[in-house]
Image 1 (cartoon, rainbow, N blue to C red):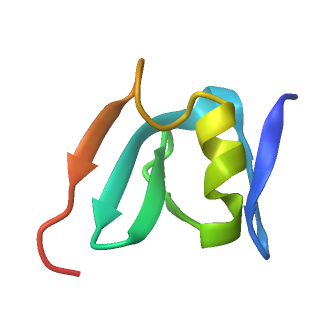
Image 2 (image 1 turned 120 degrees about the vertical axis):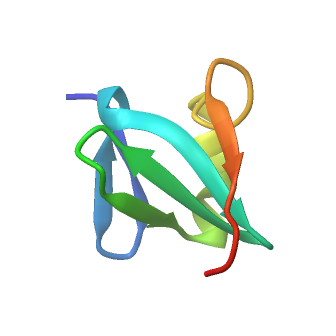
Length: 65
């Protein structure tokens, strides 16, 4: 299965990513099962290169925490 390690203890399958949520500088990936996976700042370039951020994904701005 294709995917990426997006945080120290998080590996995410590419087919499960439904949206990217932002709160300030923090990113989270909303997965098909409802889980929100944190994205480490060091992993942002790889997530962007995989096409998970930007075109083809619905980006959501989080309100609050």
